[in-house]
Image (cartoon, rainbow, N blue to C red; front, side, top):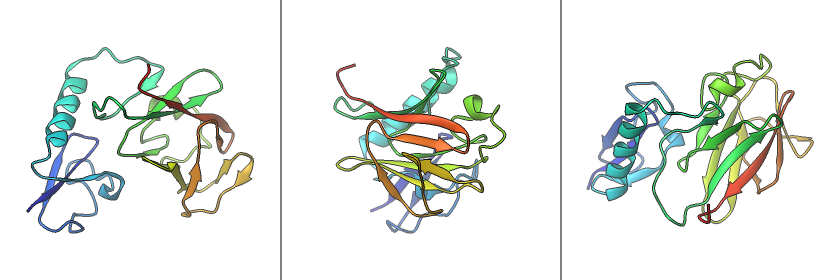
Length: 176
């Protein structure tokens, strides 16, 4: 049995042992540990690849939203980080890294205090969202500094501050 991961760039990486995946995507060098592992023949893999092709084929993106690869799961909970000015960073279901050169780059590029790779965000089905500070300048969760490289569970409505950029984690269910 073979396994695979689908990177945010659309690359499908296949490997033999469940934990035997390479550290980085061969195409874009993103860390593969941030993405879910699937059986190679899982139908969700084809959906992810199709969604990525569709999103790259159309230039009808909203400037206020940053969206990566998403699964079309009817009861999936979607999470976003909403900034004070109304801009939203959509968190992919497989998780991502938020920063000036990662997910949210278009929105966060103007904030020099935000690191290029600032915060690792991983949605979990039953427990909410796990955030992990990977920045040089630090991150606050509800006003408390979190320890670098230590995962912290956050819930809907939690205020997350990347240096001087305040945002709120919001959950969007299947009713939308």
